[in-house]
Picture 1 (cartoon, helix red, strand yellow):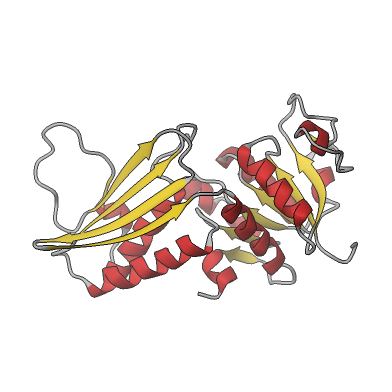
Picture 2: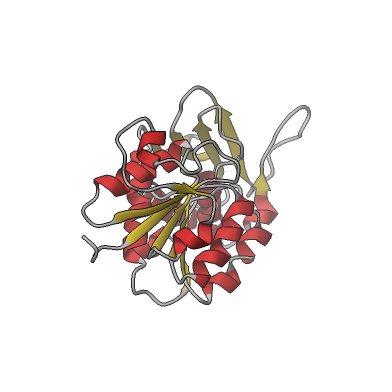
Length: 269
């Protein structure tokens, strides 16, 4: 099994971290060679399988990412923006493929990944699922085909633990719609309405965030014109789709030239 790529998972104790660990362990195309948690976390020094309440996996949780990355060919990272920037520099130093599913990154933080992408492969996406990335491409095509008589609204729903809004996927969809129309999303984004806001501005792209319960991820793109509406929807019922997509990205990145890629590249869309 040593011929298959070794994978490190960051943020091991989180919901996505544990799902990623299970996905890699269950795969015959990759090996789990390291897991990383923040300094002071209760899992540090424990076997990750036992920390997750199962059988030992022979991988000890560490707070030293560089030591873990040095043993790996890829890092899968669904953490927080500040941590992701630190991991990007270390993954580039170790020449690991860095798969980034972290959301809530600002334009400045995304730009700060550029130095790392000159030395290693970075695959970053607000959503790793095949279905969502198909929806992104469809959104771009529909927005290009319809004029501003059609108002565009992006509606997303997630569990009540999610800390950022709009979701990374919603922003991907908004960017796709803006690109289809040939405009800059920052110039037409409408992210909140409360009180006497006045009439909707023609050409704006609206965003609405729902938070509740254990919603995994729901995204609608609405094109509304007088007399007709087009609604495109993606519903996620299992986080495993994101983990499988992230693993696919980690495997795809092996042997690729350094650069900043996304799931459109991975899926050949």
